Figure: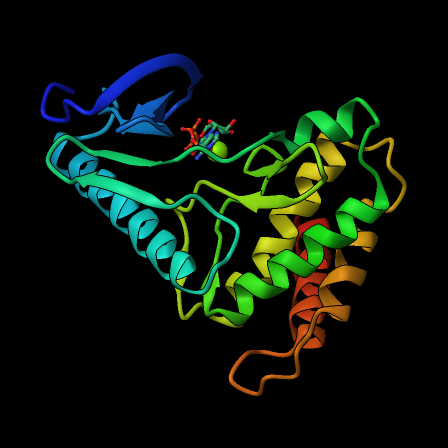
Length: 219
Ligand SMILES: Nc1ncnc2c1ncn2[C@@H]1O[C@H](COP(=O)(O)OP(=O)(O)OP(=O)(O)O)[C@@H](O)[C@H]1O
Ligand SMILES: [Mg+2]
């Protein structure tokens, strides 16, 4: 990381399957460095292609979201060759932790639904909507992160899948909150702006329900 001398590394935030995420500062601004590492078991060519795709998808989504003032990190630096992206540090903790300790409930989940609707109306699907990829500030403001699997101009199926991925996460990790996905869907439906360029919220929720029954049926 010598190429970026303004970078001062701090604590390691996350050592994941794909990426290492380190907090620090860039030119004095709180920042986060995300580096995607090669994965030994994949063919090197495939690995490079996937890494490049994910980095490009993340950068494209973040810059579009930045342009519309959507709560997500701002890109500060991108290096395709070293598979790294530097972005602003988002305040707060993963929503996962707040839901676990009971300090967030249905109101926050409704707010999350509204935020997902706003993302979808901006013409982007997330692709990995778990509660680890939603950050919540002390004031309860939500931001979305981790756009490596996002799509531009997604099909109805991808929009429905965002809700399904979240549904599975809520069922697996937050099952003590009754009908958590119901609260998300309420927020999602209420936030429909009626903009005819997007799939309606009703259509997306309907598709989500269809996906759910498909999954249930086929196991
Ligand atoms: N901009 C940011 N501001 C604050 N924290 C962040 C930021 N980006 C990432 N993090 C923290 O690092 C964690 C991992 O980041 P991210 O979700 O982008 O990587 P990942 O792709 O999920 O890694 P994995 O390969 O495990 O899937 C997040 O859950 C969050 O806690
Ligand atoms: Mg993540």
